[in-house]
Amino acid sequence: MKNAVFFDTGAFLALVNNVDQLHEQAKAALEEVECLGSRVTTPFVLVEACTYLQRRVNAEAGRRLWESIVSGEAQVKLLPVDERDLVRAHQIAAQYADQAFSWVDCTSFACIERLKISRVFSFDKDFLIFKFSHGPLHRIP
Image (tube, rainbow, N blue to C red; front, side, top):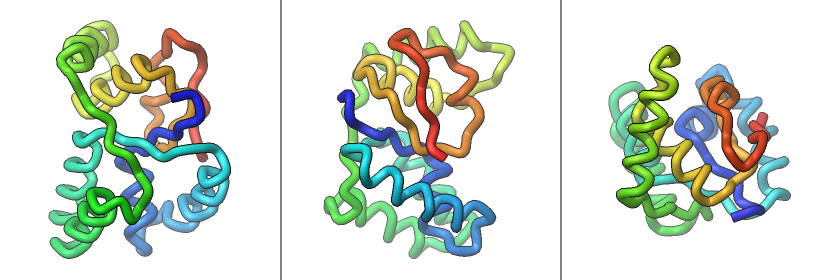
């Protein structure tokens, strides 16, 4: 998935919540992302983002994000997470135990690594800390 851009939770939160401190930066970055290729994420990221919106913004915001991705309106493809990804996520968590990466991030790292994705739309510094075996990751913004 050479031309894919992986969307992390923070990107979704900043894009859909116009009072988020990173909203304007996310909107500007989205213009760059639109030129780079397909948009992808995992079901774990979707669940994390919708749960956060439901609890911290309102239930409707979480529902709208869920529906826009599941319906295809947002043009973000959900990547399958398989057993290999879960095993690799556990290895990553153990290898980087001093970093306290979230399980969602470890699973994202495993999928990004397996699919050789080279770009991620994220505000999370953890995506810069983890060293991907297929080369450096370009983080947007």
